[in-house]
Length: 465
Image (cartoon, rainbow, N blue to C red; front, side, top):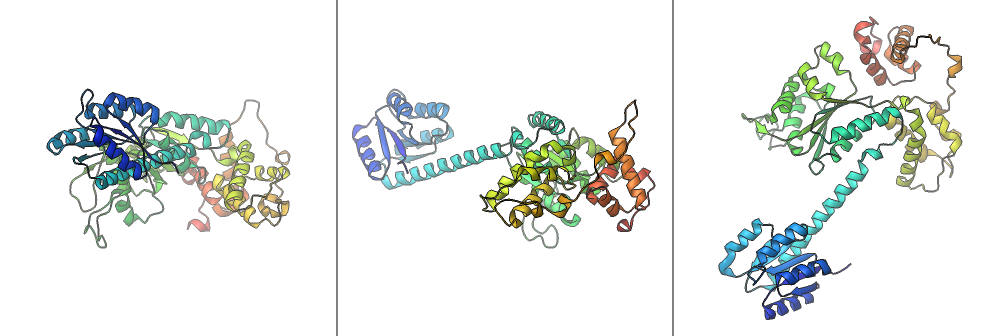
């Protein structure tokens, strides 16, 4: 590990020599300069990690040197050395960006401790910078794999939305990558150095959700034994991701609307409002417009949330992306599970592409992990694939659909297929979903999209009673 480089700037020859010797003995690589101008030249040549400068020097003062370093080398910490009688000048220098100061006569142990703290602070800043860089790399839009037109359109919209402050509503089935897209928007926005907080509105009991969102103070309710920050406060200066926003109770929708309109929240147990600076990104698999019509979701809140709506396509509409995703998840699982020798033969890829993946990308990733864990040899065999991937499906040519010369609506065809499947099984959603090779949640999403629960008159199946 290289020795830390320190630049010492002082016009007192004897003091400079003594301090340089002591710091060298302490393990630092020390360069010395007799004035501010020479110090700046040394900055360019020696690239120090830290600067120690006397405050009062002829020509360029220590304060002038500090301001130049802050302008041109903003990350390098500066420690000032000042006489006891000019401490007020050191305080002024602290306001100009000095890390700390020591007084004359300099105590070498105090100076060493100050240097260690400054370098530790510098190291933490560097760690944060590297973490931010890795997050930027991980959550760049280019890391959302796929090249289908439907996906590229959404990513183009999202990249433009990231540069704004507008509220974003991400719509899509479970497992399509809504949270990943939300993180990409955050880490490509001006708020990327701020926090990214997440709350799943459908995963928290209703009686606890308000406290989780907005926080509470000690004694606000039975069991509130300490003050607690809510997710909104945790996201102050950054982004709050509200997953499954369609599950938010109607009484809390009013409070979320106030946050969007006025930037204010009220903690449980506190009478007055608190101001926060938060960008909201919401996501849902439900049809919020249908919920508005049914009175289950506030119309004013819906329009506040859907300033920029983004619709993530399901995996069955991105079949051309499946081979790339399979290879990506396979290499990822192989490395994480310690099976670097395992191979996935190319002839098996079509089996993944012929399945509709009702659980979308999340289901695909989980299935590939299962295959990597359970496969017996050094090469995945057909028998290692789950039975539902190996199952022969109806060939498209065996399913006849007359194509009218004037064209047709794909959505109308899908709606009709769903209605016919539900009719076939007397409205039983579970059996209809199995017949269509969908998850029941995906079927409900499609039904809500086409308004079937309200308009079709299909009776509820046993699982809905």
